[in-house]
Image 1: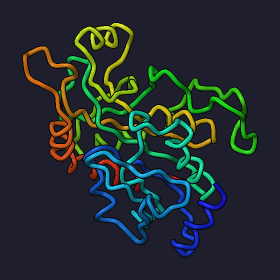
Image 2 (image 1 turned 180 degrees about the horizontal axis):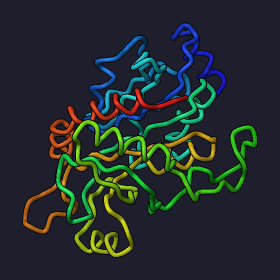
Image 3 (image 1 turned 90 degrees about the horizontal axis):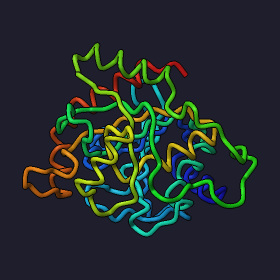
Length: 268
């Protein structure tokens, strides 16, 4: 981990980020517009390469709205065959680089029947149904305690800031619980019914491992889902990753506006 941190500091002239942002499927344009330094995951020691369409696989550093920010332009997923430790390794690296607040974004399927594609949902809580936990294994006491409290993973004050920013921008945001499955297959109609009955509002294949580790490391976490499809459609249409990318692209203007407004409002 220290090798990774030293390499990044050397490549970025000791840039010290205050805020980390993980940009999900189809949402990476923010890192194209704001970029002071960019490093491919393939060049960073101990990082794994992202293989999913819509994820460029770069660590991007920039000064945005007066805040020093590091962005993951694409993430790695459990379903790609990476271990939980590998996909959450960048969170620990961000912590060591100086990050205090982490904004997690993703593309998600709507379980709540009032949600529509291109809606934005502020995550209030999550349900981990991935079958594993990134904290399994020997604990690193320098990072966090063995049994971290999970009663407020997504900080209420950050949720309030995000809601205020959305209101100021005239964006109708939803709030809800994010349910994480391992993927890569989409859910069956029966599984969606189960998720709905158990309290999930949106479903995806990421975010929860990073949120768990960020909370464990003492970072303040905000989560935002871009609703890209109606999960497990029962109207005869087929779900596809292309549909996810297209819906995320349609939402990117309001998504970028919201993230920028949140960055302006954050008092660090």
